[in-house]
Image 1 (cartoon, rainbow, N blue to C red):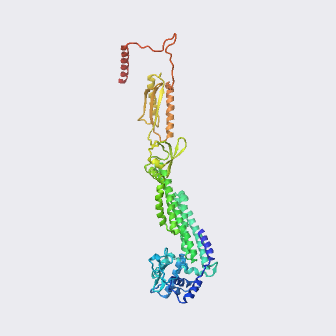
Image 2 (cartoon, rainbow, N blue to C red):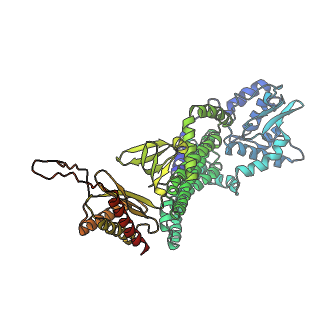
Image 3 (cartoon, rainbow, N blue to C red):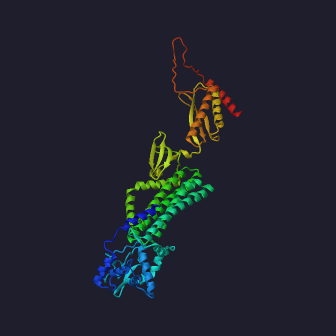
Length: 554
């Protein structure tokens, strides 16, 4: 409905505009100077003769055909070719500015090797030009041979038939337009409105119903349906471009409408592909859910952002090139030169970008992993284009450039298959050896009974005599995926150790100092006395060795 309303508004505004100098005034002025005979000696005279005799008030197609270089063509057919050529000018919005047409019989075009040719629109219609042969300027024989082809390109799908049907509705003039033109505008607006409603019903009811029937209702409602509606707008724009030519509106108006529609078409296509990116990203997200790595889940948003940026850039170039008809080659050339300067000025940014690519390729860590790298110690929350966000154990957030991470040494605690737990259990010096053995045996049973400990590798031994305690090494591994699970298992193991110690009567030692008085009046000295007998000591040693060796043998 909006494109049709815009067309109607522009038609109404342009209908009140009058050219500063009418075709009749130009003809009268030129005829006074050149006489009444057809003046085809200059590009100006030929163009004026052609367009003046195809005006509504002076419609003489046969006379206008004298401006065409005809070969083996009868008079009636020549008139039809002249009318078609005029309709090509009007349908494509080719504005003929007689002020710019040279009134010089010896004119040459410096852009085309100084040939005696005059082009009305060399960019869009290089086939249509005036050419001087002998003393006369006429539309070239090449132009005449291309009229039917260009006509069918301008009015495709049989729309050219409407040029002969619509004028039969009436020639009365209202607001500067014929009645058949106003009726055509009304029909265009009505058709656009009805087609929009029809497409909306088909998409909302038909397409959505089919998607829901096959189990894709959510996909259809969130992604496919908005995309289909944008495509319907594009189809309406294409229909408007086809039909606006048939109305034979003023060339200035047609030129503006076609330019607006030509800008809107690549813009709508850009929106279509912008929405398609969401569908592609959703597909990749489904694939990422099937992988074990969480890094793929971070890669999907980066792919979505990259593709959307690419779509916007390419769409903008098409809007500039096809819509606004701006030559983008100098722009791209300048962009390449500026890109070199930008690359030199943004080395760190580019390094970080390629660092992020290397992270996604090598996958040294994934989201949720606990990593350590230099002063960095925390859990990975997000991997972006420029930096990686890490949540430290102080609950602060660190942003590390990906270029530094790619070059750094990373200790990924999250990739550990087993999580080590090492501790030293200190017991008092008055603990009997048998109780120590029993306590160590109980510790091993605790490890073997726990569901998340590694059973094939663990080390629990009485291994040191420290300054204030007897030390038992407790060296085990947990088979758990996260740090929280590891803490829970540590808690369970330590609680069981405390319960074991309480059950056996083992006392844990802590740093203490005991003061002994070596001598005190009327008291026996605390300093032990040692007999001065080497044989006695050797006998005790032999007794100990026999006893301990006998234990090992049995």
